[in-house]
Image (cartoon, rainbow, N blue to C red; front, side, top):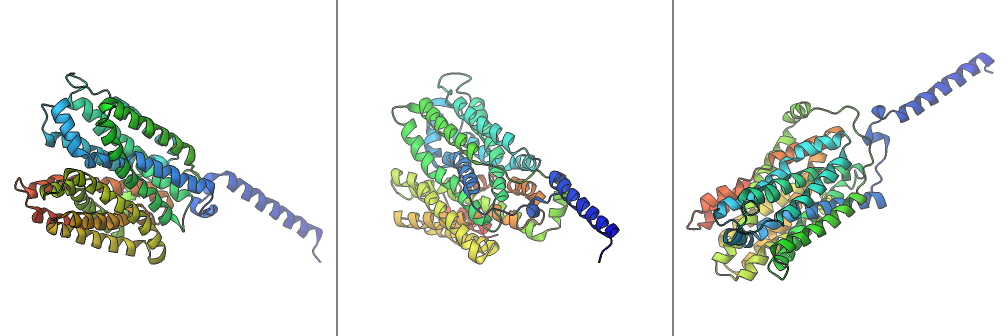
Length: 427
């Protein structure tokens, strides 16, 4: 039988234990976000966040990819009406800088999300994107400021590029708050947003700009659509985990990452993939046209490419749940490289369709695995945002299209450029 004094001691210890537990719950610095709370792996908030992130990708990189799709039409529109004193190669840098900033700014936005600034970053990025589009719609021919290369470059190249960079990494990072076991599937669904945008935006813009609305009202209509979708996205996306109590500096993350061989290989592979990806994205339409195919079919060859990509991104996410993220990544990369080599034999509409669907499907599978792979290779949860930002910044190089263009030469020697792009893609 226990004595009264021992009973009082037990009660006192129990009370202290309970008090300490309550104190720890109130103190987020003592809570490990990845362990203290179980991941819901579904539910309205989780899937709503996925849908919101998909809309962000649809309006961000989906719109940016549209520049490459209707680049021929855009360059004609600018050189013949707006930027008559600028060369086509100079105008092409507008789209290249847009993509570069869309990836490289993630090194800033990823860190801010780790600090708990998800909502401010998303709001600023979305407002900047809508403002840049409405600013672009003010461009007018025969007007010094509105038709200058600087005006269009600042709005479409710099403004929209920074806006995309502010929203890209956070849209993937917030999904990791709700999923762990099914994270690859959730992020793969989000990645389909940019492919869907690359399919729908060019068709819409082509009909708006070359229809009754014209350039100004057509761009404003697309800006209004993007604004509405971005507003819905901000209502749907919700963070769940508390901000990291001790924000790790990029110096420490880089030091840890430099000793992680698997992570370094992933970064190099993604940068090499972007090199080959830009070749297919920028030159498939031109290759089709120069081989005697109709302008209409050549225009929609990129749409076929992104249609295959959207299916591949979703399929890759499902397959990764069975065979693993690394295996899915390697197989997708190797087959997409083979599709680039196959461009050497492009000569008919059937070959263009096969190459576009094949490369789109397997490159889409690789793209869907990029964010889950980084998450998979990151041992510390607090480093996910920073590592994603670093990875996208490394892979943001936009040298693929210019270098392949040099190899292509003015005589259009396609086999040399195809071999270079395919070899880069397989690294």
